[in-house]
Length: 187
Length: 45
Image (cartoon, rainbow over all chains, first blue to last red; front, side, top):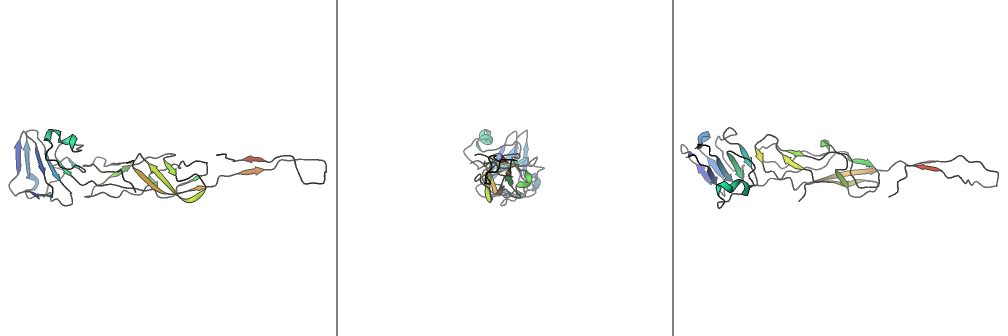
């Protein structure tokens, strides 16, 4: 456990701060836990946001949350962003946890026989809501739409055929703070 | 690994229309016609 004690902020001038823990982070010093001036930034590498106690630190104090960013004590700070999958700048929390968001197809997916396995046009309503988010995050899936984005399991007339959309799906959180959601394992 | 999403869908039969062709012949004691019907909607795969 990594703890910032009450009335004992982490302070530096002209430098950067990186705190890392293999357990969880606890802030007992409120919104003033970090006093980083002179253009520096602070980063907290932890394991899972659901285990941390931010102690009043909000988006007013940090710029991003990054998942799938395992801490690495051996990585120089100057190289950390690229080496540790950090896709943002400024102050931030980085977590080792690698949440995976999922969707599946739903609704009427039908076409008239045309001798091929090409799927019918799909829209956003053909996809179920995103599952797999954590920490109250709001994540939107970018989905492919239009004709032939799906493929039937075979070309023959029938019902209950598996239709699969492969590729073109990614997780996006709009203007939110969260980054690093994995969309590579859809249901 | 490529992101995928799957579900269930259906493929319904395509419409096939067969139209008889008008024919006349001299009586030969049979019901046979030499005129072939026309087909629309046939698909060859």
